[in-house]
Image (tube, one colour):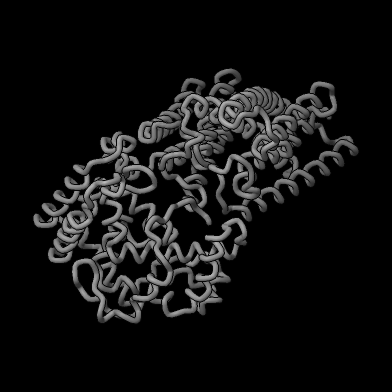
Length: 572
């Protein structure tokens, strides 16, 4: 599946489909007792959006819910739910509003909300290949269940035997099941009731349901978002949710609910990305670059850096762990490293052009991290038990990933050189300056990666009883380290200097890409299973192909220029 979102409320397939919305609309009603109304998709969407406009979700965003092994605000629960089902956080409005409206609107079963992500599955179900969104009623009217039932059985017997298409079918079933539980109110009631977390405790489901129903009835009966009745019911629901008994493991989250809501709202890493891109463009534009003093340039680096550090600090404060527990976290960390290392290079050498490229790189990394939440999950849920050692997590993993930042600097400088060569610019002085910076970055990256590998071995001996086991993650980290060490050795003995050193840094970086992304998203094998996910393989493959094509074209042009005596691109 594309995310590790755990759908705790998925129940037996036969039960789910035995009371389908489409066939029992007249007999069924939503949580507040209003009968479902079979309408056209257009009318359903109009009704749904009209309900959304009446909801002030801010009133209950801070309510405590239990999901994913921690207490989180309703705002986060709604965001994660809508993302998983719909593919976006807020396709029709604020995700919390969308979530509440699905429970209140009598037309919600006919709202096209479920994203069918695989085109082939759409056509097999009888939908148009271009129709990404379908409703609960649409799915029930197809042969959906007959296809899913045997796969669910197969998953129970051996989940590893499922192929990519079969996993996609099960993911669609999970999306359907999750949205259905939202519409029926089971999802919210289950997440706000903490009694199941304690053995022998009396159930509080009915009390929780009463509070939820009171709030939803107030929303339905008072179309004004700021109605006193709605505010009173919302306050009662929030107070009730926060007053429930929680396990000691969860207790520290209760004090951070409002902070997490603020963290979600500010989108701090997106703003940092925008700042990086804007300030990087100032360095890259010749006229503005001439006007930037060294002191001003350092301030340009410091502003988005401070914003990003605040965001990382909030993630660490909320989760209590280093922000490198998944691909999203490592990308944020690498973007920080690129900026910090580039700031050091700028302070030492004052090359504003290189600084512009590095600021842009940090911005692009952050922007990519924010753009694909289904693939690069930004959730703050607890990490697996093997990682719950802050000392090793904060030393081994952060050291490994920060080395990727240094290698990224060298890779970008190498690619800029390749592009300049293809565009026919004179590169002699340019290459000399860029090679110096790239070489320093490679030195730093190799040092950090080597230290990180050694620390990982010590942690592996502590956790698994062996220092080294040729696990794919370990092996590819070593391959990446050896690739850049070989590149430095080739430069030292004169085999690869100047243009060729810069040209080969992107090739060595492909080993980093495999260690960083490929092991988790393509191989998905080994003991580092807590980092496994899927998605993005096509985009990464395209990047690799383009990278190799650019490299080949630039090297061929460089060799022809040297043969013609017109290169001037530095020694080889």
